Image (cartoon, rainbow, N blue to C red):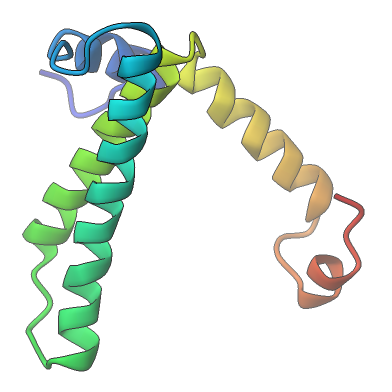
Length: 112
């Protein structure tokens, strides 16, 4: 497999391993709960590193972020959305909001 993958390709490949969530609204609900759960597992690793003195485990963080990405793709698919289009539109919005990169001033006085 190639070292690069578009979001469109990822979404298509991730969809191959879907199925436990059912269809329709059930699939949306399972993907939303899975996304929240996996994001929580990532946050918990950061909490353990920050508050409990655990060492940084880059592979564990990458594994959890991979699970977040899978559920994000599943959520987009369950809603009939194109993950790559979502990414492009989000970057376009951020470019408009922060044309010269992030700034506190633009963040405080943004229109949307």
